[in-house]
Image 1: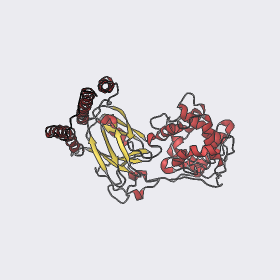
Image 2 (image 1 turned 90 degrees about the vertical axis):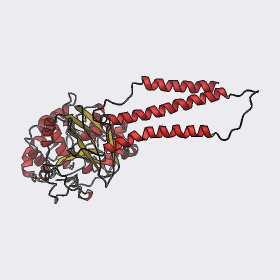
Image 3 (image 1 turned 60 degrees about the vertical axis):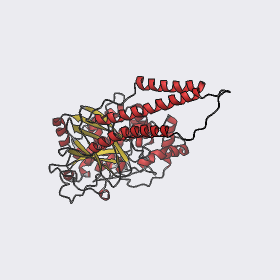
Image 4 (image 1 turned 30 degrees about the horizontal axis):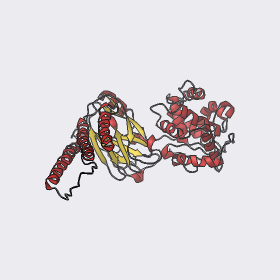
Length: 462
């Protein structure tokens, strides 16, 4: 009797939870209401079966409970019951699968006039490519991928020159325009998903998968990777901004074509030397840093990383938080560099400075830090020398007090909160895995223990 009551309460509680629960799909922002309808049909069918089976079990438990005067009746077959079960099961399965097959057929058949965009996934970020005025994507090959050509585009293909390359996790799409989304992975399995669009698709290395949608609501929607792709899978996030066609066109035109991205003017270290005079006041003439002025070591650091941070300071992506006193100072200094050429020149000069390990100023448990660093090393390298492909700077041999402070800044939200700072956003997630100041000290102690050879430690891609 008690078991029968429990089964009935389970059914009642489950139905009430479903009806009264505040958790449901996010409001839809595309043309795929049919996907929601298909899911609803599945819930109705499985819900009906759940209720029927459990109430039938409760009935059987009560109806055929043990009583001394009752005698069990053995009935190994009941063809009528079996036909009913086969018929009802068939109806249920067809009801669930048939709508899904129809929707799937529509899902992979984009309109002929749909605009195309390519989504490229890699551990652990997104980037995008649009065809140029010819409307045709240039050929790509993973064997062509390099720091200077992160998309692996074939420069010998005439269709490649005008491709628009967007090395950013933020994608803009025009409102109420059909879009065919081509999906490509550089490394492992990923899955591109925007929950509000009700669209997702696996990205398989060596293949091009696709789907299509029509964005129907303006706004910013988060991109998630729904395939476990490695230790920083949870930090592989991006953003899709849906806006009117005119605003989208202006945004897309602000990015370079593949051809223009390959035209690189060599940096001038001699010109950069005069620009570095202002930097030297804090960071030292040799770029070795000055803890008293909160100026970290620059010499030996990845040139790509230095350029990115200077541009972030200059473009108010970093150094704007009211409590980030030293970041705000750097933003003012970066503003004195007139343009990207000036930034490239000053970094070229920093590249010529002697690379000597920064002095050790912090203590911690290096053994414990080694275990903590295992996750960090996936991007920054097992020897903490950095990885340009991951946008990960060198850590070993750099100013330990600065590394500690930046980890605290990421954890507290002083850094990595700007939507355009994709690497900073990832670092906020990773810094949160260090759950105490002691854990940070231990990781820094491990970094201090790594052997760094004197001489250049460049990760230059230009």
